[in-house]
Image 1 (cartoon, rainbow, N blue to C red):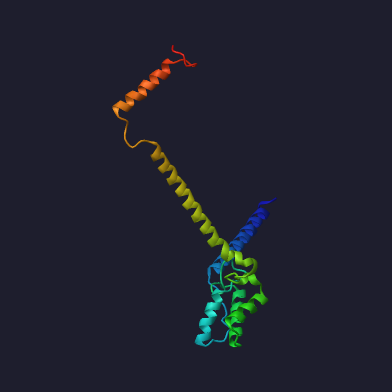
Image 2 (image 1 turned 120 degrees about the vertical axis):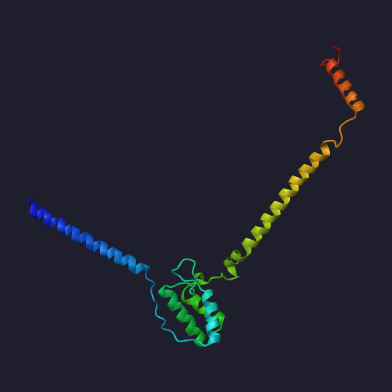
Length: 185
């Protein structure tokens, strides 16, 4: 390859790298800029607005992990907020709004699981688990204290007197002087 051609390839490569770097920088800058979502909904009367806010807290966004539709900025959350507002404007009760959202999406969008059927376990198991754990700790501590009290009962509170010690030593001496068959050594 001649030098001129090699120089042109370097210029093209440098230009390509510069364009890619600029595009990458623009993408990073765009991702850091907050996105303004269109608020294309009709204002609710104050009493309905308060109900809508509490309903938003009870409905999970299906795309955002662990966020309710009041917390989420996803387009689906905005759509769901609009659905709630429409239901409230049509005169639906809170239970009817939740039922409508469950029918539209699934029961998994509820922030609080229902207190019936298999989901009842979500409400029952944690308190029962805490109760069982507390009972286990209670009985373990009681057993430890019982063992400590039994140990205290076994050991004498006062040391034996000199006369008692002399009797015990005399018995030991007698036993030591006797043979295995009871005969004297």
